[in-house]
Length: 481
Image 1 (tube, rainbow, N blue to C red):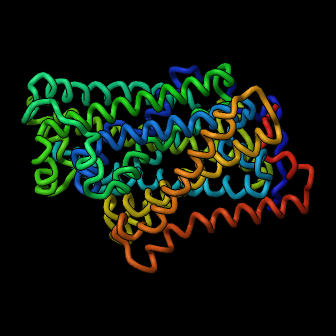
Image 2: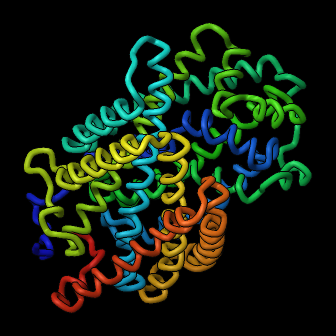
């Protein structure tokens, strides 16, 4: 099979100028899945993280993400490629490191996509089953995979417009519940300090940090769509900062209100008493709003996960496309659809992989949430943290070799600090993988071990390209122009 690179032409290009700042921001927020985070991740973070200190933890994580974004947007202004992390690493740390990051990205985003399909199937089977629409979890997961594949095959702005509607409805339902809690004063009043050391450092602060980080996965999508956005040099930075701020404010405020809904001292016992901690948001919604709000929230939770999975699908399709275009993967992958200008081959490949993985878990009788989501999605967290750390250090190297008008804060201090923090969190995930996913050897080291394995594979693939086609190797990560 030939791995010859595809030379980008006007015909073989992603659809340019198809996404504005607002649409790009909505697509990033959709990947963060606000309702999924509030209903799924936040109650679990209360339980196994630091309880009432979690809103303060999320505020700290928001600041960390803003520091990371300083270097990220600085380099994004100079490298405009859908390869994002891969392109930044290739142009800064060399083609071999770029190849390693590209393959880690393919693994990480696929892992999150597979995990989300499991979560969607499990929740959809429950929500729609109560309405009389009975399918096994894998039926809903496979149906979602096919629909997402069709959307991804056609064009990104079609997927984006759907996600804009879903995200708006998600925010509305959560804000309605939050506003009701605020107006009633909660269980014991609204006044409590989530930054108090005895709250912030209670329980497992490290686990709380990682749960809050997971809600920001997808922020880097602002650069993945760089070849398709209008005025990328300004749109990518604006959308990046806007997304982080919106997500941060939303989670801090709404998790705060979920604490006061029960009370600081009663929070963890009440969540622990539930048969499933993810039911906490719906219990609160039923208590404070009543009526159809809880049911509507359940339906929107399914659409929230669907929107997030759609975003991940689009990320994967673009990474596969760029990897094929640049010669890291077979050339037939690096082409766009003649009419839709979408990375349709990458989209089809991702859909096939999703169907295969869901089918394997179904045949083995594994649980869609406890196994497919919990096991596989955590691989994504490790992979994204690794890529963010590498990218932070790549920013420093890039601006050392290419002095620009950036300040020392943007090109050295901020990326150095964020690189160290991201690397530290990646090590934490690696060391605690078995505990956080409830897996035992050999799976507790096989799953996280996939990240370095894919990195080494990417390094070897790019090394081979350096031998057989030095010219293409030298162009890895370059802008398509």
